[in-house]
Amino acid sequence: MGSLPLDASLRPLDPEAFAGDSRPVVDFLAEYYRDVDKYPVRAADLEPGRLRKLLPEAAPEHGEPMENVLEDVRRDILPGLTHWQSPSFFAYFPMNASPAGFAGEMLSAGLNVVPFVWAASPAAAELESVVVDWMGTLLGLPQRLLFSGGGGGVLQGSTCEAVVCTLAAARDRALHRLGHESIMKLVVYASDQTHVTFQKGARLVGIPPSNFRVIQTTPASGYGLTADAVRAAVDRDVARGLVPLYLCATVGTTGLGAVDPVRELGEEARRHGMWLHVDAAYAGSAAICPEFQGYLDGAELADSVSMNPHKLFLTNADCCCLWVASPGAVTSALSTDPEYLKNVGTDATGKPAAIDYKDWQISLSRRFRAIKLWVVLRRYGAVGLRAHIRRHVTAAKWFERTVAADERFEVVVARKFSLVCFRLRARFVGDDTVDELNRELLAAVNASGRAFMTHFVVDGKFVIRLAVGGAMTEMRHVADVWDLLQANADHVLRRHQL
Image (cartoon, rainbow, N blue to C red):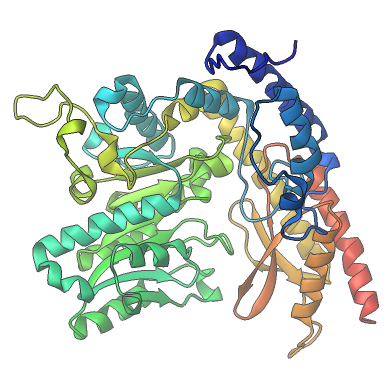
């Protein structure tokens, strides 16, 4: 049955129209997923401005059937996409999708509630507090970070949002003690492997760029941030009259998948009263498996922890879990209390009787993300999600072993999760062509359309990253990309007569 016609008596949420427009979209996506591996993972020959040339200069005056819209998506939009759900997408980090995640997203979009205060949708706010406690328990987080233990959690859109919220909380906690004029003395610490969003977040909350310390890591620590290096940087700043504010420990860095020692950094943070944030955006999902929970050892010393279920946890974007040990520190920095947003019901103290999540985030409006994560947890269960994580880690282990066995290649840093960092090895000390060879190799693989990977630079070395974790990725796809790498390596080396 085709979509219902649109006319002057438009009734957008008519149940029949809703069903009529939704069914073709579901069928379209099912067809897309069946055929996604037939598309070039990344169209290499496109130039900026292509789509503007294909689309009309103005929006249509009259509505069209959904089938017409979807045909334009097929003809004009799909060829210009990088296909993140392709089983041969190994770039950046995965952005998982799943039927349960899609169903949860449909429920969120379909119900379309805005739970910024408890009264605006009580069940939505309460489901969020339940789901973040479920997640924290699955990851083995300490009770002090859960609602059940005096802490609490919130679902943000991204780590970037979580970082700004925690930096604002740390800033206000310090300035309450020191006075607002001391903001120019506050210092934030991270490693040279920490995601750049922390530098952006620090600027947004008013920390001078000159007060952001990027501490060097080394191969000796697997590019993890050491407590000794932090201590030296902090002691130098204290001697200059500056105030250590915030320290980031990362579990699974973006470039290399490195892990900072949370316990050691937590002890260093406590020595100077710094806020410790644990960024587990990528690798946090792995902690659902007991064998990976050791990487979060020391989380009881953290003021906040974040991870992204939309990376490896089969939860469609967007979804970031943020836990804090002191919810009051966050709400003190972020809360607003205009009369038109007050809950009618209060407890005996006059304070709100329930959680108002508007005070846990930057924006006022918010989506019903909790139902999406709840559907994923209900549909797959902990056992299914652990199997998903382990399947990709196993594939990455195979790839790492295979790369190491080929004398032309080297693994740059030992794999910890499902990210493998490797490159064509230098032929001799001082080989100044090796980076260009690796650039050519990566470019050739990506230009083929049969796979897509990205790179990193560490210690001046150009490194190729293979991030395994797509919802549709199987062992055969990892084996295929290795065959593709070998064939293109042969070609690149022959062209350079090596």
